[in-house]
Amino acid sequence: MKMNYDTFWKIVECVQPLNKQVNHLKQSGRLVTEFLILTLQQYSEEEIIDYERIFNEMKTIIWTRSTRQVGELLFAGLSGDGFEWLCARLIYQGKQEYENYLENPDNLADYLAQNPEVYMLDGEGFDDLADRAFIAKRDSNGQPIDYEKIPSQIHWLNFEDDFDFYEQYERQELLEKFPKLWKIYGWEEGEFDD
Image (cartoon, rainbow, N blue to C red):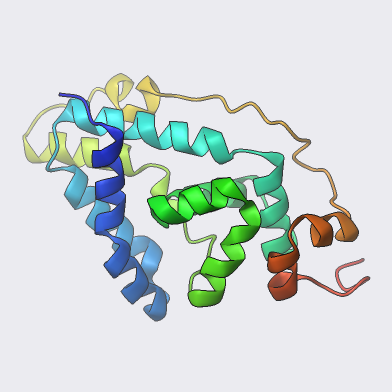
């Protein structure tokens, strides 16, 4: 049985109350990912593999220069891993916030203003959820693990960057493109110069 988009978003949405609660405790990443892994284990292996496919599709859509710029603005610099975690976290904020972000990345400011405790780089554990759920499911059933069949190996995506990852963004460009985010996260000229 394959997983559909509604089921994918249902799984993501099921953790939103927990996500809000543990964000307040500054422990969201680990607790939420463990809960999601337990939730995913209830699905078939085929559905877990499909979950990875859908996650990667959603991630591919936001793997853009604009998202890279948002990361630069939010964190005054962003590593490759940090960029992946930001993309994952944008998905795991839920369908409505994801769609709001797609409509206009500056809409993220509205969400962050209402949820100041959210740390957008706390997406580290979200990238390999399907793999961890798949392995845990096999372990609990006493089945051997064929690492060529884990979800990330089946649905490996080589993201095409539409940007130079190490490009330095001009302060004025970020201010004009993301005025609401800039109002919260912008910096003074020269503040981060060496």
